[in-house]
Length: 456
Image (tube, rainbow, N blue to C red):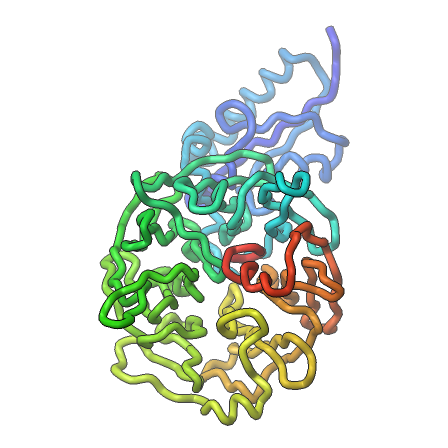
């Protein structure tokens, strides 16, 4: 009988450990693989995630009969220490133990997702590609667009095509699940500056529109159960413009759609800027025009530009003007080229805020970083860091550890690139070149749709 090396990892769950992302490999939650070596490092390789619950790892040499006996014995040991492996394996693996952590505690190793194209000219199709921050490229992962990472970096959501009716989630092992399908006559609205996953990873919020663009609703989905938990029809003045007494739906995507840090509300800046309660659908108007807006870290207010720079505390009838437009111009802050608005982006932990804009110093784009750890309001004249670049930035994403930023940019002499900015050193690195056949007048199209994801 052939004899060979075996390895088995048997988890010993605790009450709050949950199931690791993707569940456990093997039957009834037991992971059985051929280890690369007979060492502790080889044992660690059998674990699905570094954050998995405690367990036992055993290597031995013997036949398949021995293998079954050892697995059975270890399973009995694990059962004596906590819930049964069968129960753990059967739990909802899309929503795992890491969702209980704060963003600053989870810094998973995940690649940067970006929109690329493949195929011959005239027959090209959009694909979701990936590159690690160290430059390792995974290439095209799946045909589609609008990729958005979950908070834990375990799954990313995407649609297969423009104006698609189905939302899928996928992991880096190639597993794909469809978690939502729109009603007949409706489609999923894909947009550039959106963050659809709730902070705990349990829910996804989408804007779903009618085919004629006359009705739009916010739809909230329970990810694990793949069901709609709430649906809120938006008032017409949120997505349409009044002209000559008639309403005209706008074809331009929203400028911001993002969950509040506390996971209770959604910020939407379109034809007006509003906050929507994720459960009740109650709407609070921040501004009656589209603005460059972002959440305050405490989820109790919204920063926004409406010529001047404001902070609106939720529940307050008025906004507090922080900086006037003359002072903003004197600071060299202005709208970035080819984008309709400046872009404010809160970091995953809420400790930093980035401002993407243009520049009056002769360079094309600027990024300003504000430190929010000491509380108080944002002081536009006191950035923690400032950076200038000749590139025309069309998308920006924070790193999970918040020490760097990824951008998609139109770079001289005419390439679309994915670049990494080290916030400590100010160094830029090019990670990938995108095969977009695009010209300068079309750059604003890149800012209209979700083309880059690292933490959102």
